[in-house]
Length: 149
Ligand SMILES: *[C@@H]1O[C@H](CO)[C@@H](O)[C@H](O)[C@H]1NC(C)=O
Image 1: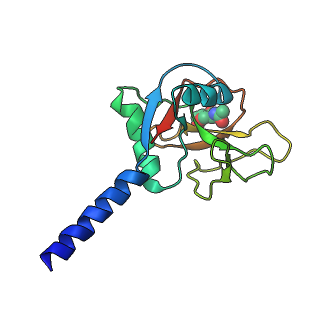
Image 2: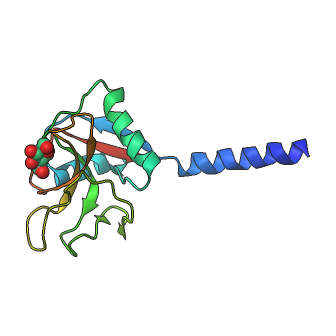
């Protein structure tokens, strides 16, 4: 009985390690698609936020480096909806992200407009609230979050 429990825990641990995403934040003013290339050059890709734990870990990656979130300071993450409005494609993985974590009132882009990239933005009304915003792919971002296996 004990051996079975131990084996189960072991397998669960290995499975979580295999799926573990490691997020690293870089504070370098740039834009979303350049950030995507930089992450690739580092051997990873722009962070794909696909669960509440990914979301928490991505925010933690920024604060772990001593950076703080400020209203209107954008941090690029993976996701592009220039194909179908509202369908956020993870370009590096070529799949649609079914998870989302938008600020109230976001996304506010409409089909054909230029807000086709994703970033963390911080609410001016509540500076403790940092969630997704749809932004122009050319928007100036203060930094970006890469994901590594
Ligand atoms: C980011 O959030 C700020 C503060 O709420 C807002 O004024 C700004 O328009 C947002 N930036 C973008 C690019 O949507």
